[in-house]
Amino acid sequence: MAKFAHSMIRVFDEVRSLDFYARAFDLKVSDYVTFPHFALIYLGDSTSSFEIGLTVNFGRDEPYSIGDGFGHLSVVVDDIDAEHDRFEREELAPGPLLDFRKGGETIARFFFVADPDGYKIEVIQKGGRLG
Image (cartoon, rainbow, N blue to C red; front, side, top):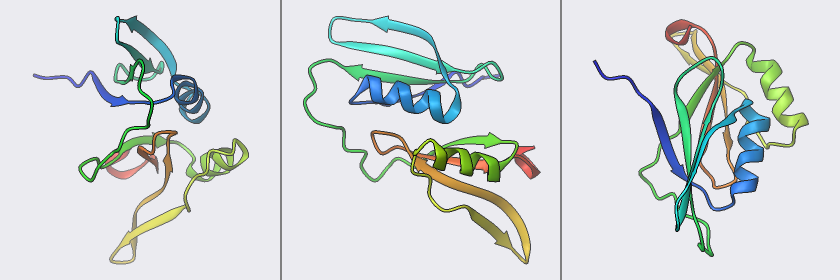
């Protein structure tokens, strides 16, 4: 059986990205591997073995174009209202808090935020299939 290990994204500004992921999701560097032309930075937390891998290509002089194929990353939180308020206080520019409904029933409550490179991250209330 396969077990997901990490998802990798390319980032332009290492310092801004590390600050964002630390403040937004309390992710810490679990490994940092440097090669001559790039670095691999793995971020994780104590609740899961899944990591975000940040690739920093040295000498790049312009941000990446995300294109139209990327969807989003998703994280689950215990209290979506408190997290939305915290993101606003941290000036992380969260989108509006949304209530996704079907047949009058709430399916999910969530908001989106973009990291410094424009990658979308869905912050979703714990519950239902994400419980």
